[in-house]
Picture 1 (cartoon, rainbow over the protein chains, first blue to last red):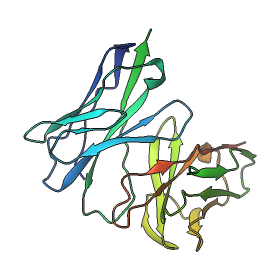
Picture 2 (picture 1 turned 30 degrees about the vertical axis):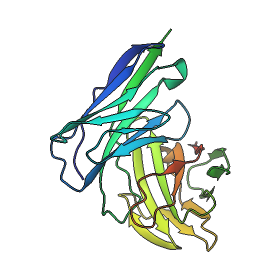
Picture 3 (picture 1 turned 90 degrees about the vertical axis):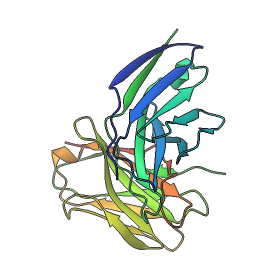
Length: 112
Length: 114
């Protein structure tokens, strides 16, 4: 699975959009980009995933560059409850396993 | 639909003892994975079970073992506990038959070894 690089921390003002970048320059054609987050003392929570098209759900939007070497998770109107560690994970679509390899992620601090 | 449940939520054990943790997946989910989270090592994959068979295993010593029952409930066991086993143990379940990437995590069991 491709390696990912994320900034260790970011701040965002409450009510503003939070844009969390992820670099995955070695991603291959059949690998998906997944995003999870972990709020303090809770289990990780699945947010969204995509292959090459932009994706949106009730929680967030995922923008993947045309060359697929990087992506951005967008929380359109961040709230204090969005303060968490956000993990970007790249996984082979054909992978027959539930194994997730978590990096250090990005700690997002939403400030009032 | 009920989420993933883990019992117990908190546990204190002494070095040398063994411990069993339990995980009940979301109804209909057949894949259950276990993770260990410590401040120093972060989230690390322990193992995954699917249809009562271990499908994948992380890089942990043989003291860490698990099993899955026919109803998809899973248990993990740690024998001869060490201080370094103090961690948050997380269980996750998935619906997908091939590739359980969209996983749903439980609240975890906080294990303290003294």
